[in-house]
Image (cartoon, rainbow, N blue to C red; front, side, top):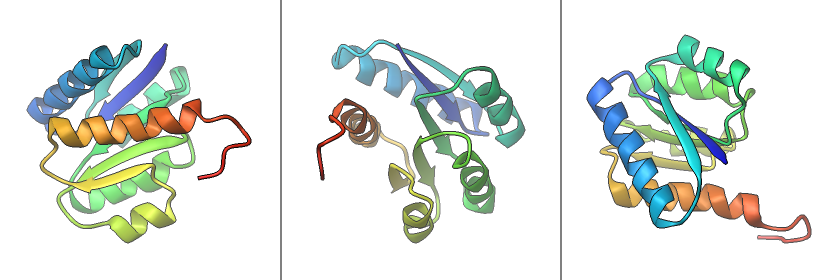
Length: 127
């Protein structure tokens, strides 16, 4: 079972992202447990208690960049949504998927599928 955490300070947006992730997983027959939090300290506690397979961070501006920078050391697959174009920083931090807001169902599907594909490739695969 996949463990997916969503970090977003906007509660309505966080709930919408969680719903998108659940729908995406259901449609792709992926068993996943999804939970959410509002900020970096809360996310750090979640990561310490249960190692996530995917972390989705949807925070704006520098707050999002700070969270990503800290989270990169705790988890492997990070999906990042921001109101600003942090594409270069996302690349440098080895973020699995970066996209500007607004978060849509189609963007969640692309991001989650990318993370799932990375997991299912055999060690000898190069791409």
